[in-house]
Every structure is written in C-alpha cells, then in structure tokens.
Length: 192
Figure 1 (tube, rainbow, N blue to C red):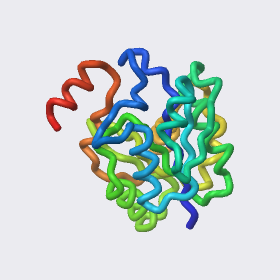
Figure 2 (spheres, rainbow, N blue to C red):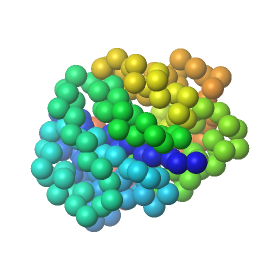
Figure 3 (cartoon, rainbow, N blue to C red):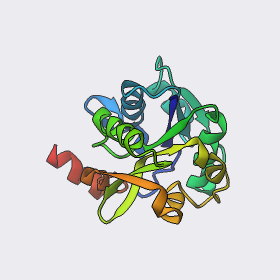
Figure 4 (cartoon, rainbow, N blue to C red):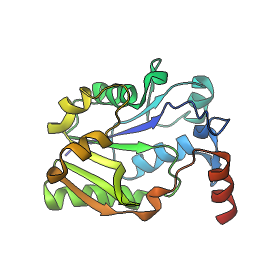
C-alpha cells in the first residue's frame, strides 16, 4: 500500500503574528519537523503545501525528499490546500493529512493511524481529541474524489463528519494542542 502524506502549511498565521511554519521545536522548524515525521513513518511521497513566506519555507525544507507545492490560493481557505495535495498525489492508495502546527505529532502517531486502517479496513482514520475528530487523519483512495470536491473553506474534517460510519479512530489527546496564537506558543514553550 502506497501511503502519501500532505503537510498542510499554507496558512497566513495571522493570529500568531509570525509564520508558525518556521517556529522552532527541538531545533527544527515546525514544517520541517512534520515533513521528517511523515517520511520517518514510511509515507512516500510527502508533499508540503505552502502559501506565504514561500522562500523561507523552501529553505527550511532544503535537502528533504519532499515535494513543495506552492498554493497561491491559500487565502481562500484550507480546502484549496487539501485539493492541491490530493491533485498531486492521486496515484497513492491513501493519503495522510498533517497540520504543521501540532507539535505532539510523532512517527508513532502516524504508524498508529496506518495500523488502525489496516486493522479496520475503514476508508478514513482520524485522531480523536477534545470531543472531536481531526488531523492527523488518513483517507483511502475511495475518498479522493470527495476531498477534491471540498469547498475552499472546508478542510478534510468535513468529510470525517459527513461519513462517521466510515471512520475509524485513534485516541490522540495531545492532538488538541496546536499553535494559533502567541498565548498558545507561550503555553507550549513553558511546558516543554
């Protein structure tokens, strides 16, 4: 089974006031760390969808065997990035979607998602946290058409919510921690 990964890193980080993709965690930028995590879990190919700060993010990803996908429509919403990733990796059997701002995603989490899909044979596997489902999440090829049909404002979560009987889950409470604001970043850095 060929499992590709799409790292969603095209947001403008407006609430944070600086590019979250370039925040440093364990001596690496968030975006590089997430791409390396997907590669270490055996995902191939790995595509990183980027929006603003393209040159700086490309430098952060230098010498990684990951495909950088500039998304010039990033301001229109997350759906533009999801569609960009699916369009380029349609030859995969499944795609794993990752957000670059979830610092607790490790290789083991990705491997758990993959194992859960193989165990259940469900077309979607999502992370469960804070009473909801979200990324990291894995979608089989049977979902690609629906992912490509998402509106600009819809992320892959819309598909998870629309077809709950087709979703297997893993518990990942740390998935609730993402970095959107200076307060989030301050809280995260003071706890590590």
